[in-house]
Length: 157
Length: 102
Picture 1 (tube, rainbow over the protein chains, first blue to last red):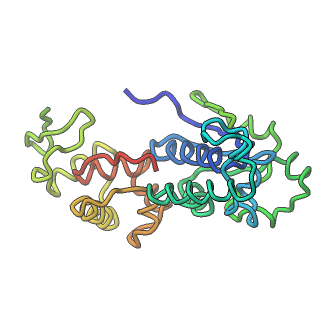
Picture 2 (picture 1 turned 90 degrees about the vertical axis):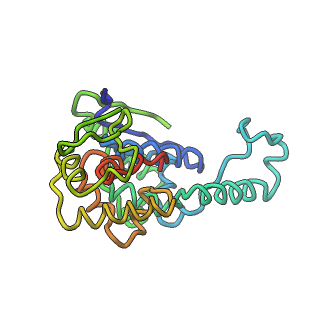
Picture 3 (picture 1 turned 135 degrees about the horizontal axis):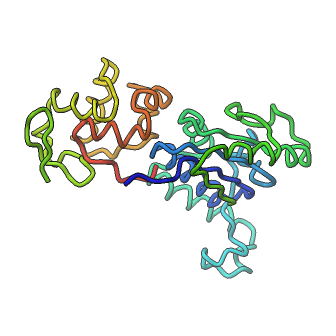
């Protein structure tokens, strides 16, 4: 029995490492199963496709109960950087690529990468601030029109 | 379970992957490729040999590994084995389906 999912559309709205990787792993996983996939980067999600910022994403240590760090401690200087370093080390052990390389893999795999027009305007970004692999800047309406067949799923992260 | 491939009884698992690599040869390979709508070319063979070599060295397969392989880039890999390249290429190569999520 094959899957009925034909196309996965992701909206990435956050720039923490865990959210970016969740979107990337699922989008890449879809391509690996022969399912089409696309990612729409909006609001802080745009950090993941800004050339200057994409290698500096952090894991959230405050307001993240899954980290099991008291909120007060999570806010101390250096804690977020340390947690990020540790997480990146663990990910490297599992052969998970860094954000920049992951975006290249996604693009080469045929996953479409879109930036949200409203958020690009709001953060005063120019096309040259964004990765070369970007397929374009879209409105949300344009992105919905990408759900053009049976078996499309849209996921907000 | 058994499956007749290239007029021979071959042991496969429920997804059709070969259980015993000793039963694999070029004839079997071409039959499985045909079922996947893949026509084998020189480049396909090169990739199959690379995958088998990795498998025999117990090195895990991933799409990142393909990028670094020097044998093929990711774009070509998707073109050669459309519709799930690592899944299909390992099936054709007679080795187990990779368990990794990346």
